Length: 229
Length: 241
Image (cartoon, rainbow over all chains, first blue to last red; front, side):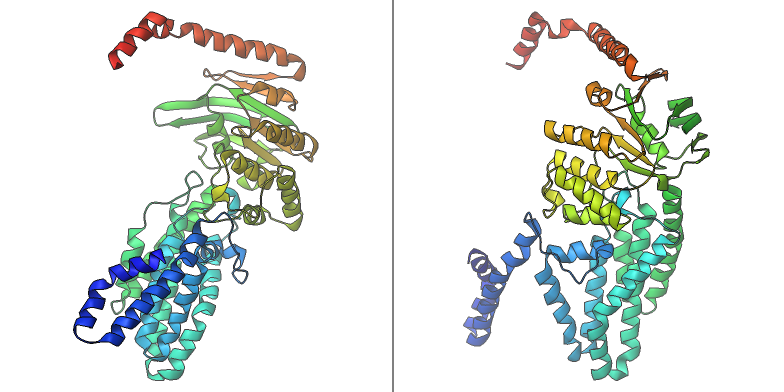
């Protein structure tokens, strides 16, 4: 109730504006939306700080970066995934949705696992990139198929969006292991990752991001080799 | 035999090891003692490739020692955020057998594996890292101050696990509490700041204890007792009051 009141107070100028112009229905929907979010917020926030957590079993443990991030706020992630279904309305929703997903990646791959958690083998980084790409392909499959079914003429654009996501995955994993050291739990802030993700919004930007990811990929493999081989 | 030969290592101008050579008998529990800063942790980090060897070699059974041979527990283990204790053990284990072993150790150490590691105390984190790493079947186990922050019962349990479940692995552990080493180690290596290395067998442990006590007394006598004498203390306090 407290959070709902807070949201209503924040939205008050908007509500008053619509009441003033006689748009009572919009004002009512805004208040109801604030109340709904107020009810939802504790379910999203409190879970992230509780002593226990409910495991999301369909996420495999070897993709722990994704698993632990989703488990922090599963409701939020579920809602986020559902918004991908808006691709039915317009393919732009899919592109925007992929872009938001790509922007979550630097946080996902920010913390370093301890040395014992990393089971190194030859081409470790490559295997990791492919397993994440495989899993993310599953996550985006339904919105992507909806995009093709309802907006077949935009298939090339949809595919470009998917390619951008793959490039972002490769970039973030490569950057993580390029910086990786077992001495510290966190890497430096990866501003470059955010910049290169945004660059992909420009036509052909993916080429720059992908080239940078490949460069860092070799450096990452070398870094791990020096630590584990 | 784990052999360190002519090892040299420095941080810039600060020389940590200069032609250090030491043989560590394999399949035994070996203790390492020495003052803060003599290079115990640095040596462990060199052995595990965290720091690269600048000169010299480290071999295990006449083969180059690789990080894949070693389970290493650092002084302050860190954990991935939002992970449960049980999940950590599962990720660290290479096989089902290792997982079962680690889980059993964790149970004996009274760890709540279903809770987030973020909410563990320092001692619990230490015990978790120990349980996960000791369950691995790598031939060399390095434990850097495993008893720090662990309660008395936990210390005893860890000692018991090391003594009775080491499965002929080479265990190297450092500690600042001599009794935790003398109880379980078959050999203790004493490092000094002058890079003198002395091996002590169980019969010589009282000698080592006496040497360490003498060393600390020497340190104490060098301490400027004037600084904490009653008069000086009062004078200093006047400054603050």
